[in-house]
Length: 397
Ligand SMILES: *Cc1c(COP(=O)(O)O)cnc(C)c1O
Image (cartoon, rainbow, N blue to C red):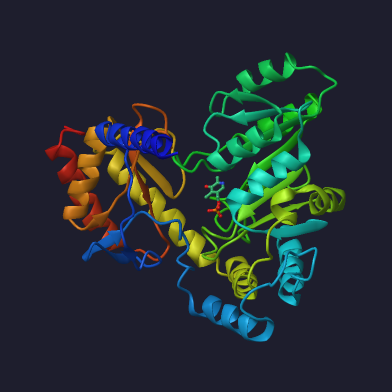
């Protein structure tokens, strides 16, 4: 026994050492105030250009209050899974609001976006299915496909021609699912949804979109990219999260009644898990109301994104096709990216180095995100520092 344990430990420590050597070892750093535009990390005050709290709602008093009211009324925990006795009344209210917001027949609120993707895909697809998935899709989509045991066809990032070739070559009798992020989390670029709808019709597939970074951001009432493009009746499955622009926690899936009925019966990460705490449902409900009416937040965010992106690109930073609030500076090597990130932190900017396996090899980057609640002069200050550090370590001339 003991020698087996010793062997395991050595192997694991070797692996950690290897990660350290290639500058891919991660560790937890205490971050206080990640909801705000300024935060404290390691006792240093930093401008927050790293959160997903795009609209600044994570600290919103109204949302916190609504959560507290729901907790007082319905309790601290759900006490069971939803199909047992955990389907407390706060669910009903939040799911009605969800359906109205998205204008769909049915909707379901789920645990995190991660468990949502894993559960939806593995419920719908089995050994005989084929999933066509953008190469840059989120890890939770990849894990859902693996768990489903379906055939996994990855198409080149946003490449409709490649996708079509794969669809053409596939067995016409198999169940086919096309799945994509609407806004890609590490690149800030946007999926070609119109083209995907055309292809799914032509090849009799079902289309699922992940609106994690577009829900609350696109569409007049923040419904998402699908509505922004007027495709809500064409996209079969819209999934998204409450954890990013909405500033809460949890996820949703909306679509036809038959789809939701099926998920309630077959989705294992929905069935075999405790219902969300009432606090979360209360806060989600409030966030959905705020996000539909406060268009000013979206306008501010768009203006800030545009400004930050064009200002930095003028200095020669590589940011590829970003057109949203997610603005990556693609550096390449882990070494230079980690140095860039460290230097920015010393200058007072929270800028996290994103490395493989989150992004492809030699495409390490700093992933900046702007917030509606940033001030223009804070962005100007940050741009100046980023340019200065970029020159200092040779990322730009
Ligand atoms: C963040 C994210 C998720 C996971 O959502 P959580 O609620 O954080 O678990 C899923 N998909 C995409 C595209 C994401 O960016």
